[in-house]
Image 1 (cartoon, rainbow, N blue to C red):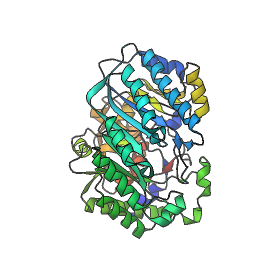
Image 2: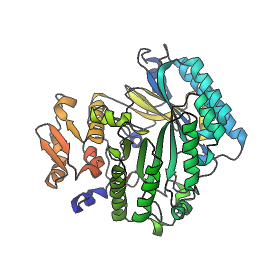
Image 3: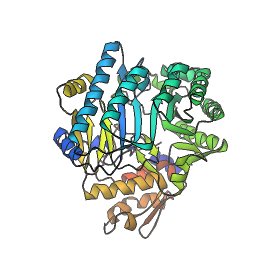
Length: 444
């Protein structure tokens, strides 16, 4: 990254996995809006479903997810029953229930429900919804809890894709982040999943972690690539100790500097492309045969709360504490506090407590931001016909002068030098943007 781009990399900007972003949700939008949006769903349009399980056996020090440590099995079981009740409640509010085209379990650690728990939730979904014939069924997994019998059970449940939280394979880094996970554990998890027939594997990596060095990152990339996952997502660690108490246990003196973070991100891209991966967007990599690569090449790449995807479903039904549902006219988020979520559902109420309505201008801006994040290019006239973005282009003038973007009429192109800070470029079209604050992560 050149020295000019490094200046912009210091800015705090959203990750733009949605627009408007979750930071702009308000309590003015809640359960009433959620009910109305569910009632207006078109049964002819298939949907995606996200199931959030906010529990882990232990909390890693780096974690920024909405999760908590499971101490008693009964607490997890009660949550599972609430999740099933929410499925029943949501399905009952839809006039004509649409089919499910994508199903994704996230967390936390969804496997904490156990095979019987996962099977129970899935049974409720199948009773209340139809599934498309070749729907994708994905689950996020902790490699430390993927026994052979469990992998076989996931395959029997119809899971087609698994995402393993690898983060880093260096023992010193693992100790610094409170996640001891030998390379052999990851290798065994991948082998068991593949043997069970779940051959589509994603690995998650993180840079900017305590005690990471360029050499340790290089070694991690080589070891991970040798396991040949189909996709690798590599995210920058967001250190927000004011919001996440577990992160306060990280020794800030051991965190890489901004320049070191940038060097790590660049090295990861170099190493993974050298190993045969195609770079997708700002933080994903995929094997040439993967559907993400063809989606990116044909302009069909999308970005949602799970990152880059070829999922073209407009509607996402988020189920579980803190999950977000996406509708044509707005977004609705469930309460993050697990006891409050469970209480709301057990009382027969939706648990949505905040969100935002999406108007025509939001839709236009959302399309522009998504195309910039996915394609590094947007034709404003084609994407938002008749709209005037002269003010936004004026905001981008310094970045154009710095060689990070190019403007040709209504066509905006992010240059190779500007790709690392595309979130900053996208922010010019975000009408909700406030002055930069620490609630967002660094651009790199």
